[in-house]
Amino acid sequence: MDENDDDLARQAELFSEVVDPYVKAALVAEDPWDAYDAVVSLRGALVDELDWLPNGGDVFVAWAELEDLYETGRTPIPDAHAALRKAATEWLAMPQVPDATHVESWLDATAKAVEFLFRRDGTFWRSPE
Image 1 (tube, helix red, strand yellow):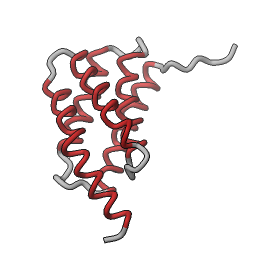
Image 2 (cartoon, one colour):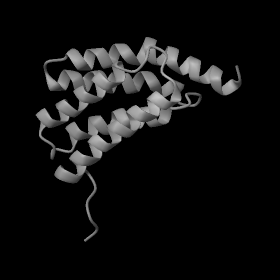
Image 3 (spheres, helix red, strand yellow):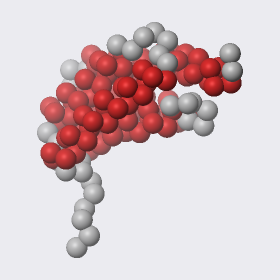
């Protein structure tokens, strides 16, 4: 097992022990803002691990973009909540020991869902006038 394999194994363990409980909380939350709060907490739990996680920065950003859907004031909250729930469902459907391929697939699907809503509804970005 090389260093990269060790990091992937540590990442899988961290995801299982730290990330998954927040994802489960977001998924079962009936109130969209409770789901949002779970993702905020999830990202907080990842901050100290970002320097060594092989996919940590990308995973952190993906969840942050799901939060942004709530925060722009442009995407209807039910749509933001649906996107978050879909991402949470797909996250929890990954194999018990996800490898880089499964994480990359989740990142790609999540980015596409967020991008669709940002294109449809708008983002924080404002055109220079």
